[in-house]
Image (tube, protein in one colour):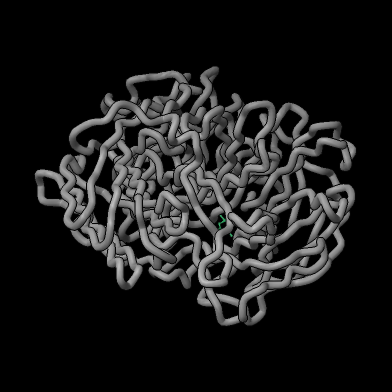
Length: 566
Ligand code: FRU
């Protein structure tokens, strides 16, 4: 990934602990204050991941202007994160955690090693950072949010913690791309406010100015996660770079505790906007003519599909059914836990939708999954994509271990972008998933062996076994049983699997007919497998100590390895 250096390079990470910025004032055994007294841009905060969160209140001219949590180091900094300061601010810091194990506040590493700087080094220091998947330059990322396409640019927002590489302080980060492969990180787009932190949501291009913010304004609907989860709105008149929050927020409320992740879209046939959001174990559907006033229409989901966890991050779209001339509606429902391989996964429903009610065409007990790996979650699609394309991106992790995966500078990556469609098999309709065509354009020259970032194309006739391996004996073994129509991936010996009991796994997918060609995308810490016809997808993380540089194939199968253009 090309990371634009928003923040210029310094040698900070390579130098010894820098001198303290400013002496902290200790006010109690859990309480300190730091007065910002500098013309510099950042206060670099030392983070220690095993620590509990300290709560930081930023006070300017006696007013509370911001609050955030940060695992400030007590023993030793794992890494630093930049807090952008304004001179004169007062940071009011309350530590939590067990004082007997933390020691005495005067000795806390964070208070000794907080430092001012004009720059922050975002150069990659992670061996597992993917080359052609989107990652934040630093900090934590989960769900993709608010994705839209406009004027040749794909916009990806995401659940982001700028103050550490674990889940906290939800903010919308922002990256842009012109090819869905190379991403440039932009300044954070939507930050927490009095209504709460900013949870997942979506954005639309309001071409006809239905909301009154201007033709082509970008309108984002997201969850404000405060005392309750409510839906809020923000708009942008500079193509998604900066957002203004709507003064009438919240725009949708409920007494349900899990009430979030609004996904908005223009319903062409109905002639109004629809919004779908997750409400406990159901999806609620709303309609609006102006994106501000929403009318509740109906709920879907009671008794349908998998209910092993909380329903989250929905999407709803109309798609053609391949080779039939028909169109059907696809409802995406991310669920955590309850996934077929444990933890998080994306289930879906196929049916009809008239702007008011979604009707599933399958029996309630039928469950359909979009991807049979362990690391495919919070999948949603871009608004306003060209040529009627339905382009989806998933978060490539699983809540079972997302906070523990062995990276530090950043956690985690997105999947490659995927094109969604529908296909029929034995009279039933399923969702097809293919790598976007931009991945074809990214193919470089063929190479003999796999490398840390490459694509493998496997042509097969019947049973096959494909093994990726490195010199340390670490391996990923993929097996296709043609008779059973099952494809497996075994990552139990893929490298570092010890950070979570839930990580070692064999994942298994139905193939809905014979597999003829597989496309396998490897990128440092991931293996994504697609049936080239789109009938099966499997996304798994792996953390090998060195690249898998050998591939062996058993059965009537052959493999071609492509490099990928950087
Ligand atoms: C899904 C999710 C969403 C929520 C967000 C918070 O991964 O739990 O439901 O909006 O993450 O970060």
